[in-house]
Length: 411
Image (spheres, rainbow, N blue to C red):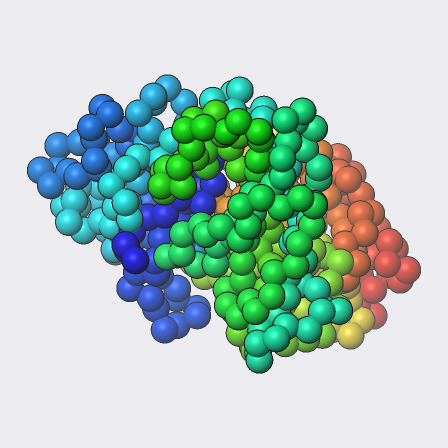
């Protein structure tokens, strides 16, 4: 098996990649961070080799906390794109490392985006779930149920289904070449990392396609329709510490973060990370704060929110049994990672990592049309109490009434 950057998914404007863990840290409080860079392929013969260091790479991030990333807004490169990754060093702004310091593609071919036409032909991603009603023949294994929406293609013959283990090394493999139905059960799954699935329609008269092309594209080529986007990961098992039942009872809230890498948020202005269970343990109210450093009204509102947050935390520390416990999560609307980092460094609360898909998912879920926006939710159920509290009093007593009690003052 070749070791290097592997393609997970691509559409007409973005590419999602993964890679093997590099310099894995034994400390959960100080995990390895990665520097990820990319460049456009220069010609059809470009194989990604750059031993002389003459080609210019663009840095996507120097602080990736997980070995998976998605690069958006990829346009204008007809020959595809190359990515390379390394463990971040103390000189995180340094971009002039030797090419030997980076891990390149597992296969010396550039990753390509789809055309708009190809993107429009794709099926929706399949839905994958653990099937608790089915017994797997192999000990210590599980069964996944995968289903998908039927294709409306007039020449439809069946469906081709693929899967990959959700780690930094596995490639896509074919489960079935031509399924007649729209659901299937996959038995004998054993990986604690979980699995993801994708599907495409098989049409009468397909020609020119080859699975060899899938190391660089989500399209086999020829007149074959590309594969769908990938399903959510199914079967992933966390460590016993992180998967143990939390006293927070915040399952409804945690569902909003199901795609968060490693199920961890940033804390201390980005200096450390915390698990979701730790972040929301016994929290009564959670606030999602959509904001950005380039926004003048945001910069004026943030100091007011910091005072509210610090006052609420101080009150809870004095009387935890009689005071509402709150937490704030920064959901950045910044345009780049540098803006996010400089802005978040001034904040005392938690944040969704800038490079995580969860950030854009939450911004969409919040229906953000203008910033700043402060959404108030129940810390246990995720029920929305206020879609935007900006412009209203930052008063803990007012917020506390949403949960049926006023525990905001110490008597």
